[in-house]
Image (cartoon, rainbow, N blue to C red; front, side):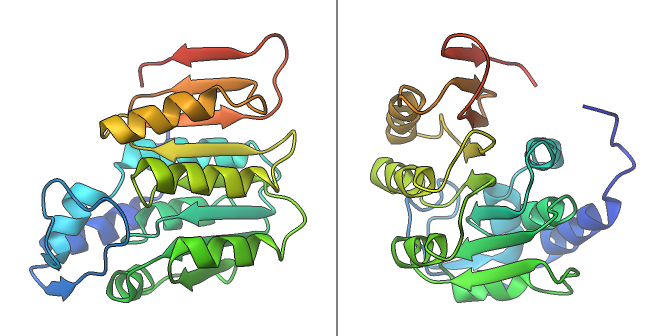
Length: 220
């Protein structure tokens, strides 16, 4: 990866605004919840601090997305829209970002620039299959929403239906809990996966790579 210290600084300005916000919103959580603020009413600053990916990993998501044709890109878990903004910078086609909580989605859409991003609201069990039916193939996906074993397996199994040789799927927080660990171990053994990379904070999956099926633990 090239040095991107001076890239996308306006997104980090947006992050800082959210981190400074003491506004409390009511959150609809359809997944495993938060380890730090597992209540229905949460401060915007707390959601941003504990439930969004760091700049380093947002740029990692951005990098792998850029290595695909990026015509159809899915982000499962919009949250505050920070990783959404990073991905939108490299998507050549359409970015579909899925969120279950309307109050969170409204914040993510604040001053959002870019006509290629589509914000989808609702339970991923309903919205994901519906949206997948509308595309021919999936180029890149980030799974960072439900954080349960069943939810993660569901998302992967649905996304796999439209995956092909150039598809890359990233799963966030693969070691967040025993359930996520179990889901990651099961997914990387899937016959369709030829290469998996474990960055601890996330796992990267490839559907076509030269040589035998491989798995690597990487420091980043």
